[in-house]
Image (cartoon, rainbow, N blue to C red; front, side, top):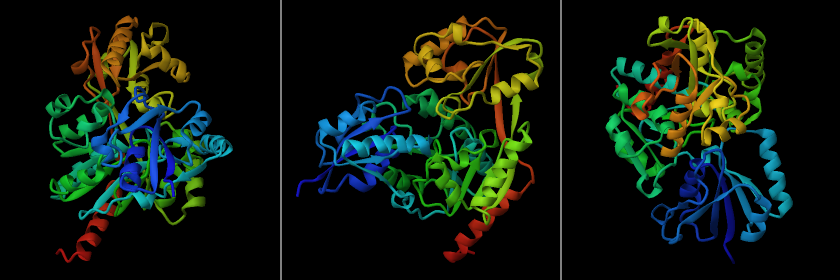
Length: 447
């Protein structure tokens, strides 16, 4: 029999993981191509033969996801496998319908099928949408676990940029490692704050190989999820964040709703300033769908390096890129800080956008008062710099976790904005974590 010809619909992360675990060594299927969505600069690349394995000596092409019907016909596709995240249920079924009408099957991969088993206790931090506050919760857990005498190690969901053949296993211990491995601004947003805490961090493309290395670096593994994807490692404690600012999305996005249904513990964050009706809707949805799941209330504590300098000034706000792009948020911590600390005006950057940022504003029309920190390439970083230079303002409020001034020269005064997770009931989260760790140790006869 001829091998089944498969097209994997992806975004440079989950798609590669699904291939590595389920298809790389199978002779009864042939992965003909990946498609690229959400993340720029992916189309035209190759999943390299060094990672694809001996059945794919020429690698696997990564193609544009427009014209899917034509791809099905031209490549003689038997089945399309959906392998990316943070997409509405309606949009998923629109894509599925087009492919089914074109004559191929349409598949989802069950979450458990691609979860690897670790010998360490695993805490996963996932969400229902991009930008719910996963990274601050991961940092909170790292600090708290260290106070308990534990040695946490973090494995981050993939961000498959750069030369893929050099990124099978990435180990980070310092900012110099970020420079040496050519990390993008988006990677630095996730990595830098953890490295500043002194936490060992791993990422890459081959998560079986990554697991073997990470298990030697600590005694508790934290899976720091990306977008609203499900974990790659089987969690002993599955934490999922929901966002009352996007009330209702917890039931209507893929695979965020799967995360809600699987969760051992749900964190409802961003309480400060959330309209009561939105918070009530989220809590009602959780009670209706997962009534037995423990819910913890939390918030993000927003700070600025020099809050007094913000008052009365015309400010340009830079926000975390993924949160306000495919995450769908119109603003983030930077706007919160500008309002809280008395900025006279938040300057609209759109008339001054340069290069690729012009397209970003066209793609995401909600972004009326902020610049997303987009830096997937050196050229895009230069566009970001040129746009900042062109905006008439008194100072820049930078709410990306990255030290932006270290990456690009910024002539204007720059104030960094930070945000950290805080519990509304102190100790609630760590009570659940310690209960899990005690159960894990008891099962293995550890006193």
